Length: 234
Image 1: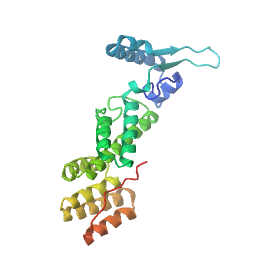
Image 2: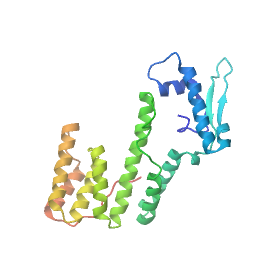
Image 3: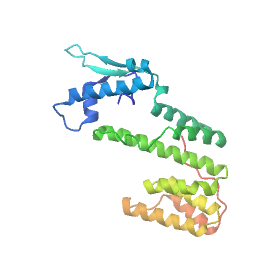
Image 4: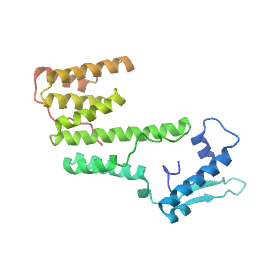
């Protein structure tokens, strides 16, 4: 929470809710230990950084004790990632795919695995971490779209398949996979990908593919020349 919301006072109650779904008697002591560990980790990076994790005492009445990480957002990977991802999307929207590829690759290099992979927490915190993972996967899709538009057809197919192995319900990735396979001359594989997408959506959600995905399927059946895929990037 301190890393997700720098320069904001995070009350002890908020930290407890982020770490435990059910209250535990040792929560206050555990929190003090965790803060000490964070200060130690910051000190290893830069001696001065340990002083940036502030303890803000309460007044015993209405103001509760809290902690605050007093650093610029740009020093924290998650915020650098968000900034770079947004920049890359803007570059892609401006049809500057080459610059978008460079920016989005920089954003994704900040990741070392799923968000909070080695951190325990409550279901509330897990939802926030899951949202970060969704942002990461969306950024991967943007990168692959930019690469596709630059003619990197065969090289993106394994990466698209990796995304779909994690989340087989992502229709934008199915569309990109179908178009990449089709552009590479693998018509039957592109049609097979559509059937895989249809099966996954039907089994998991009980729905048919979107009209856009169905139209792509028909276009491939007809042997149409396809435009570059779009993700509705905003």
